[in-house]
Amino acid sequence: MTTSTASVALPPASVATPAPSARLPLRSLLILSFGVLVTVTAESLPAGLMPEMSADLGVSPMQIGLLISIWALTVIVTSIPLAKTVSRVDRRLVVGVSLGVFALATLATALAPTYGFAFAMRIASATAHGVFWAVVIVYASSLLAPSHLGRGLALVTAGGTAATVAGLPAATLLAQGLGWRAAFAALGVIALILGVVVMRGMPRYVPEPASASARTAGFWRDPSLPALIAFGASAILIAVAQFASFTYIRPYLDVSASVDPAWVAGLLFAYGLAGMGGVVAAGFLADRFPRSSLVAILVAFAAAFALLTLAAGVLAAVIGALLVWGFAIGALFPLLQTTLMRIATERTRTLASAGIVVLFNVGIAAGPWLGGVVGGETSPTVTTAVSAAAMVVAAGFGVLGVILAGRRLAAARD
Image 1: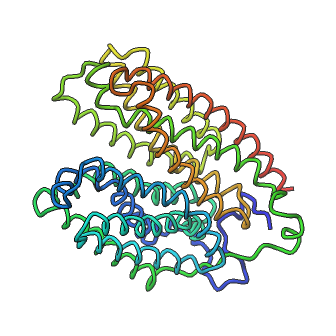
Image 2: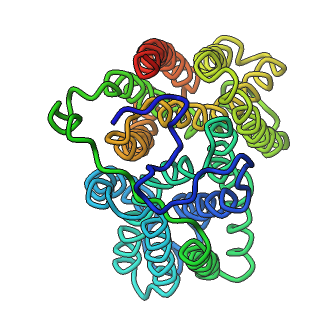
Image 3: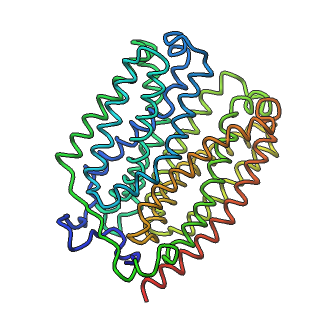
């Protein structure tokens, strides 16, 4: 069954699910957003707790860094197969159980007697995180009227930006005061509470089975696939560009931009605030100018990297480029997710949501490696130049996706 823009978020009539309200379901969206905040904070938490974890578990900082790498690898390997396995299960149940499993694994990490045990619990946490992310956007979409889709998904994905701006710093401060185990324990308790709240207080949503005609046509003939593939190619390049340069942002500011060390924390905080501004803007843009704003953000992203490369010695240009970069990365994910949810059919919606998470995690894994290979520590402007080039290609795929999306939606309306 294909889904037009006008019906993308409506649950099927055959399922006992409340219809989307004409009002924004703020409580439900905030619950999901907090779930995103907690899981994304846990994803990168070892980076903020590296000295404490290294000393307590008796391993090198590099081994603590592997706790982040194994997380990304686990999400890449497990998200799509598990999302397919639960594709016909009540989304409320999937979200609640995945938060519960995540909570238990995170609490177990806080009690880890050895590094090996912590490593195993990170795999368990990441598996639950991948399932949660595979369905949370689809679930949120089912709660939203079409006119609120952009704002609603922006609010849910804002939890990821908030994790960088507030979640990780807060967890790091807690660890410095009470130890690294307290930070993991706190996240586990919060996730467990959220899981219970989802199970007891959120509405059901069971996806409608694909129609007989859709099954007969075959998956690879699904009308949404061409646009989804184009956006997927764009997504992996965006993630590579982002993490190739952001991993080496300190060397860039120190070596290339010659920024006073006293300014660095303030600049990174401003970058994070710009990201939150991008999320807010995306909520309005996605409901009014969804495809044109996505293209504009991709172009701005590429321009920011180009400016960081060509004007590294000009402080005003560097500050401006960092603000544009932060705004763009904040706006990009909600704009992209909204577009995917509008063009995907019921058959491909879960795959689209899970696939974008997998592709971003591929970029998270490959980006820092690429940045290091091209000289991230000693020649950071080479890295920003590579990111600019990757973003130009990503913008090209994005434009192609927008064109294909327009055709897909036009065909669905006919």
